[in-house]
Amino acid sequence: MPSNTKKRRRNRTQIFIVVLALAVLVGGYVLLADMVDSRGKVKAYFDNGEGKSSEFVLEIARTDAERSKGLMFRKPGELKAKEGMIFVFPTEQIQSFWMKNTYISLDMIFVNRSLEVVGVLKEVPVLNEKRRQVSTPSSYVVELLAGQADKHGIKKGSKLVLLGDISNAP
Image 1 (cartoon, rainbow, N blue to C red):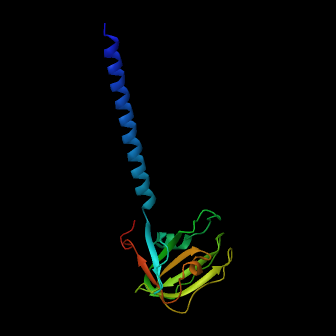
Image 2: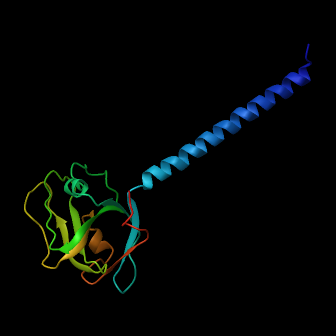
Image 3: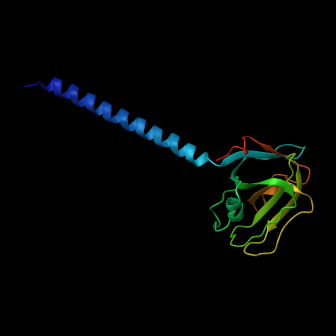
């Protein structure tokens, strides 16, 4: 029959193994959740020549389906001030947007292939089908919460700085 000392030692060892296994599982889950959360996103900021804006985390919309849906059906509060979406187009041309089924007022920032801002539409009204565009061709359009362009000094001539690769995004 084992002594109490041996039982306590065995119990401590078993508790240590269980705690260690839980720590590994939690750590793995956190790492996996971070990887899944960052898929299809890129960090970016704008430089207006007088300084850079805060960093934004932009969801990447590259396919026709992703670009068609955009930020539709998002409710106020679901998009944070430092979040947005970047629409990546296969060709540089006049890009046209509407706010059908979009419940969040947005700023639309049109960017050419040289990553220069060629136009900004501010506080675009929600829930309408009026086409919105600027007169200069663009390859990218960044949508941020309304007011962010003014707050961060984003204007025509600013540069978009991407802190990651959007060409191979999932």
